Image 1: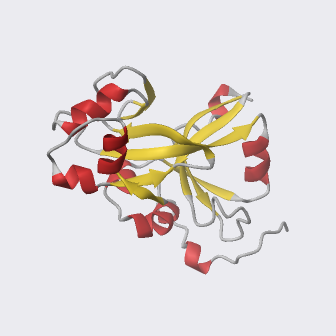
Image 2: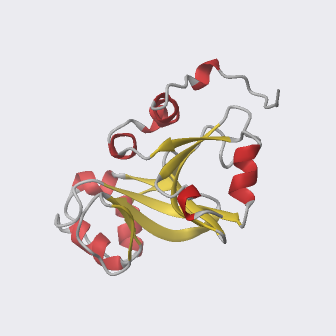
Length: 187
């Protein structure tokens, strides 16, 4: 795979014909993509948990009711017990992968402890699990027209309501997914 063909820092927008129920109408931020495969986080699926519940499980206390009620997202079907904090904070935390200058994902406890006391990132999403693709798998799915690729956009990630992220992400490149068919094919 060419280094310049990496889809890191891109949003994958599931086409209407997406057959995999994990990704139907999904929007996935690609964190890493190289010759060994790809890893991403879905950013428009709610889990059954709040951030307060996750913090309690980790024995982290917060006095912030809004933070405690913040939704936790389902990032994908792989390792659903593994947590990720997607944020736009420039600080380096214990275990941070910088996706872009203004976007990072952190897996260490220190970021959650800082968030619990009001010293964390201003904009953050808590995500459980991730999506993964083996070597060449994502390229194959893109060739089968399963996904649209869209440049990542912090407004979609942190400001757009969950229920409209699929349409908003596709709309970023001028596509109205509501007008697309739910079957795929080639001319």
